[in-house]
Image (cartoon, rainbow, N blue to C red; front, side, top):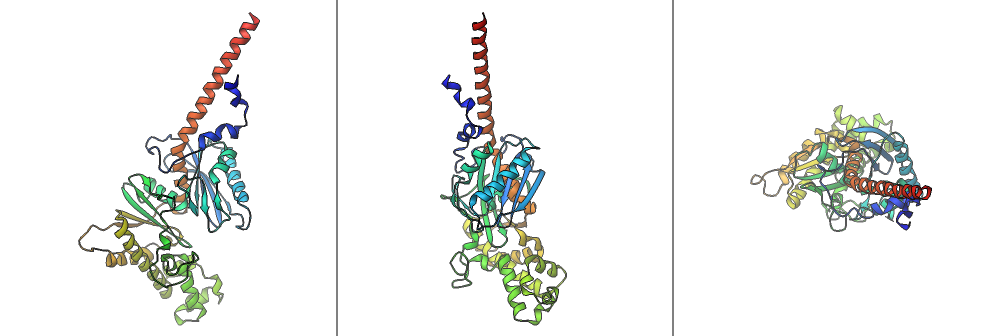
Length: 381
């Protein structure tokens, strides 16, 4: 009877072996992945967003909560994720969970090696959550999941070689070639924001100076605006008046709003950020030669106020300009839900192994029931 002993084991321990290894590449094409609903989780420094996503990228239901304080233990964030997934599972037949985390994820997509906005250091997130949720769990960097979503359902559809750049507090990125996210040997490829573009330039939280994200990101945009406002510059009078002299209230969305209203300083700041964006894109084009750059993240909401100057700077700085094809530069289409949608869709690639394991368990249980019934019939004969 030992063949059937796993039938009485706790659910989490029965299903956990299914989840041991995802591997360093997408094992199965998205074209043959089961068309089942999955949950995507997007974890940032300020929010945790969870949604049930169907096979066409449609969000069936979405929940959002604040990220627990980063001073708290990693278990607090894990508890938040589990609660959101279980809440959604009450109303949807969930077959897998994908997590896009703002941090470095190892090549096996199990451990979050480092998350700057959370207390995760070499955290085995996938293994811990898979036992609690009893479905396959996939963990990836949030820029990778956003790039996958844009390639599958958004601005990157039809592209064979795509680079995504996410402009938020800093700069994230991802590389996608021939239907595969390129994560690098150790899983941390795409950290474009820490390319050094100005030797000895602004100090970056990473410890280096002159990183790209110190010149083209939400932080850079706000820093420049606040410096002008603090100096009581005449060009900053518009934004000083809007925040009633409180320099700390200047934010990226406010700068974008004023730029759309025609504030000259805010327009100029976005042009500066866009020009630095174009310089970095030209460097990436020289190294990677993609067909398309997709620009996402909160700062991309400035649209042509940012992307127009980026295209101009890209053309000026592109190696071999005039003698080579130029990559297309476009704004992301899926907005802040891209990371969540991509995480859910990537999770669909591992949902099949759970379905197969579940089917085997059901078949094993049915065989045992037939065997037990036959024994009972013999005993009563």
